Image (tube, rainbow, N blue to C red; front, side, top):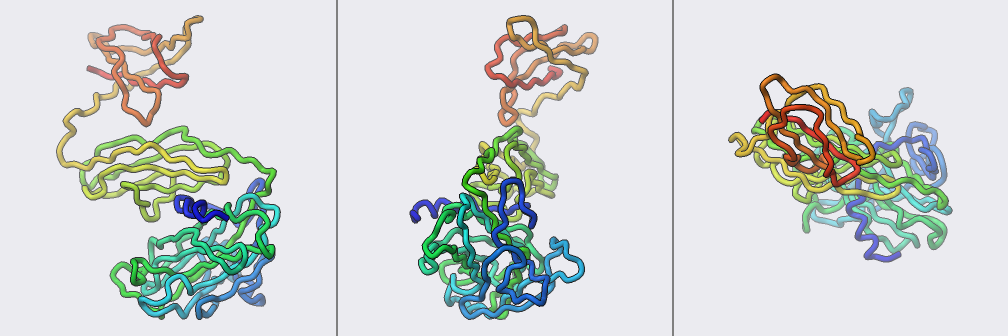
Length: 377
């Protein structure tokens, strides 16, 4: 295992919509739901592996995640006995052990709950030999007092045949700064009496012969301008092999709990202005959108976009030239402008003005895909 390779896994920390049922091509290696109270927490509900406490913690049963569909006996694993403030980062939590034999890609997923005074940051470490641990990545909880569902880590660098036959994972509390823990509740103080809960812990893999399609954008986010207090909505669409994991970034930093293809900012503030990008990951890889700018200003735009004339239009191909014909009706006595772009993530460019009649023929398109806008001048 190359240490420098593991350090690149930071961008692969994602919040996922995963299921306890295997997806196409996917193998469930070990699952813990903690709903069968006749089983000790160490024994998985399905698959094979072990779960134990590490760093002086103790394990208890508590109420389960609402995302767990088990209605008769829904439990979770509570973890208590964390270190005192400023002591022993990256040591206390739980440890999982399982075999990844025959798998080319691995994912770890779980639901996570933290009480207000518990550490808001967890860290996942992994060891191929059971002793030499390397940090995969960290995750900061977005809310206290309720479950954050479907937290997922990519462990693909650990697939294969490790020393001793097993992978060992540790999910442990970590300093939020260089010297101390930070409480899950923003106005609370960290305390070792705080507790975590875990539910729906799932380790999945994909066999070596499986070749999924990586994600690709079919609709990229676009820049926009909003007034303070309004709702800003950024979104993207992708194709590829589902499931997808989404993460929005603002000025290079992950936006907490922004893990859907749409980013909705209600009552947007000036401090939320800046560059945004969407990272989309699936089991085959990841793609990052081009940065788009969200402007938040109380002043009207200096160059407002032209009003869009909503009229019936039809696009067709003319003859052997490959020209695109845009057919539409112009209001009597008016003229129109034609705008075009090869990518919805880029601004429209004016390509014709004072058009008095239809159809308009575009013979200079530069890409296979073309988008048009018809506006009043």
